[in-house]
Amino acid sequence: MPQFLIERQIPGAGKLSSDELKSISQKSCGVLREMNRTGKDVQWVQSYVTGDKIFCVYNAPNAKAVKEHAEKGGFPANSIMPVMRTISPITAETG
Image 1 (cartoon, helix red, strand yellow):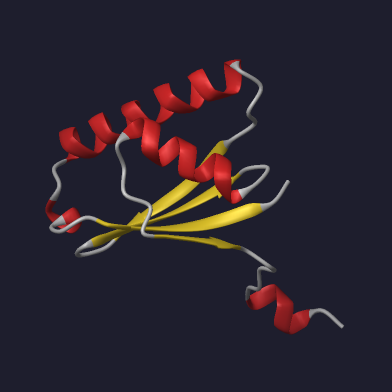
Image 2 (image 1 turned 135 degrees about the vertical axis):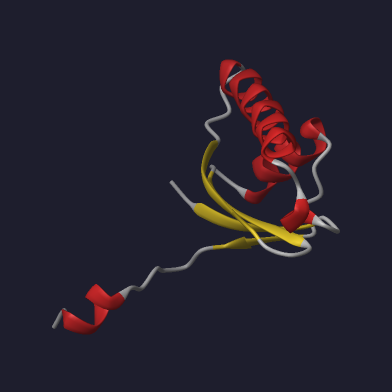
């Protein structure tokens, strides 16, 4: 399944409390459950919270499904980029 990196501009994201992040996560998971009940296979893999942005990794059939999740959840999706490949320190060791 294709993977996407989503950039969400959220001023003060790095200062969100644990309770606020929990609430956001619960909202996201609820929207995903509803979407998946209707046949849309969208999976949230992980997110990274920085000062004024949250970067999310999602598996989805297409960018349209990722955008739909953002709209239904009320989350910004300022940029949705397909992940073409991943690399890691292991990449340096493979031949």
